[in-house]
Image (cartoon, rainbow, N blue to C red):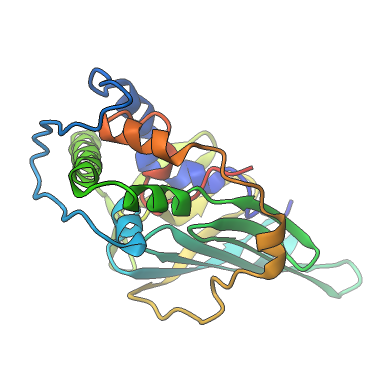
Length: 277
């Protein structure tokens, strides 16, 4: 079985996402949806400046330990399947996954498999050429709605994000600490069903993964990685075929300001991977 870059593995690997349902249920009593009044949050961490650009807001919404992180993996699977996976993450929710795999055939030939999955603040797509699966990303619409707010309301939203991450950090410390180190990066070992993995919690990425279908192990980790000029190039075909975002960005920001994380919780895990499809 060939690993599917669109499968649910990546979402399950974001270990901190396991805490999101309880975080959503623990949100304070909801304020009137028409009011983004200032809230007393007592986050316990230094307040993040409220950004005044699209890129700045997205970096607060989807932070990383550096502006760009690249992890390259060795991949092994059944029937002699082997190859590599490269994941490039940018602060602000940009992400690219590229698989290059080879499968030996009975006649001695090799079947080459290449696939990629890309997300930007406005689009997300899987595949290439005429075989694309495309959806619209909600991140850009959220950023545009944020920029349409007065400074006082932006401050509430950024404080809510600070509060969310402060509570996640506290919950993470109370559960377990990283117990392994791979390529100099601490990671937390865990087991989900028949999958063993070690998660780099700041990025949500596994550095080691062993499952029934395939396995992978990080070969290289690069912080502040160089970004190829075409890594996140959006084709005219993607723009033409992408349906509109599935949420009301203004209402989503109102909920976020009230510390109601139920809707946007899936977007707030480290290394943000959009729950599309």
